[in-house]
Image: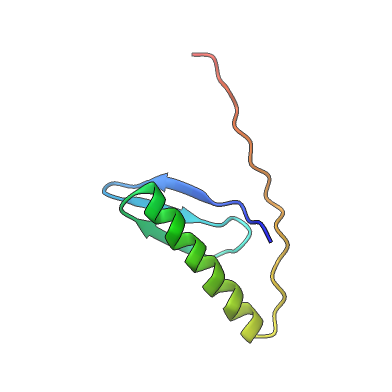
Length: 70
């Protein structure tokens, strides 16, 4: 399974979330740490869904970058 993640810079760290998994969030001191933490959060989130008998939602987010002329 492949989910899109978003990593944003906060005041003093980075935060990450998964648009297709509401409530699945993580933080880290660096981008790399935030990415590692969100990977663990996704695994934990999906494990919790399975334990509750809920199917993992399909990945449906589409990510693109848009170039804007300044």
